[in-house]
Image 1 (tube, helix red, strand yellow):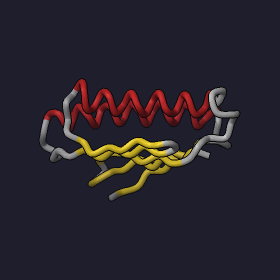
Image 2 (image 1 turned 90 degrees about the vertical axis):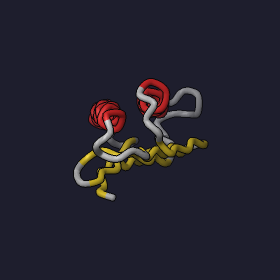
Image 3 (image 1 turned 45 degrees about the vertical axis):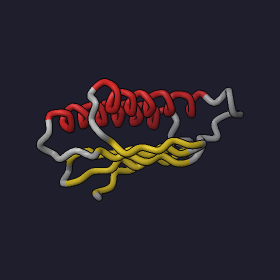
Image 4 (image 1 turned 120 degrees about the horizontal axis):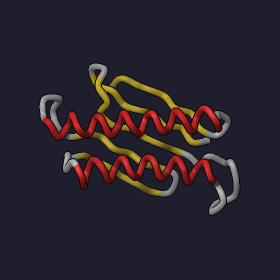
Length: 109
């Protein structure tokens, strides 16, 4: 199962951490893993390359982490929060269909 924790600070989205493999199918054929990876990696690219909001991120097999570096007041941070919100909606949609393979948690940091 993939567990994704959406991180919030004062109720605002600031990042996420994902761990694990979905286990829906064998590697290379796992549509749940592919969908989750595509949504999350697109969010990282949108935040770092499109919005150019500084963020700490790390990606390795079965793990992805991102934390925004900006203060709540910066315009880039607000745009990054919109991308994180869109990512969260996409992940919720995947979770509705594949709840045995994806768990979405929200945590205040």
